[in-house]
Length: 208
Image (cartoon, rainbow, N blue to C red):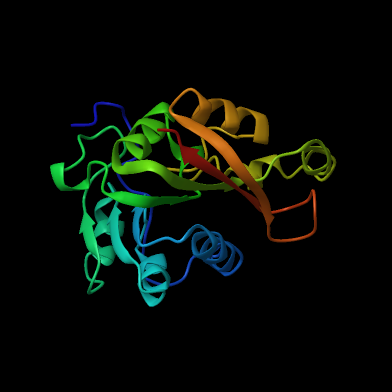
């Protein structure tokens, strides 16, 4: 099992839409459609709300979530294969190399060992499969404005159990995934205006 410490309770109270879903899910769906998604694994699905979106598209959907409360909500969603697992845990035999798409929304900034996300994605994806990774956007202009507005504390949720413990830029996330069998194929900003985006999507292809 995963021996890397992580917050046992993120604070899920319901299966309702998260604040990031309105600007993340439509973009994720568009990317998946373009790449011909048929079988998708949602890594760190949280309360599972996004699973409705994936299944509505007709994709065979599986999900993993280590948080007990999030998992309890997600496993109630009919039609999805939801298992209580975290990155770093051994993947089930029937998941190994079984997916053409992995989606991980706003997860990697919460991980003590982000290399485990890369390893998990690589183990379950087919060669040529894609990993869609969304994270809070950081760039020079946004970082400057956060500093001027004294909003860093608000941005990182330091008093929230399971809050952000790392922040990522486009170069650092690209470097993380390229340490595994991946290459960057797409970049998208999500939410708000360009270069002040709320989040960013980076799409990686698993190399043969």
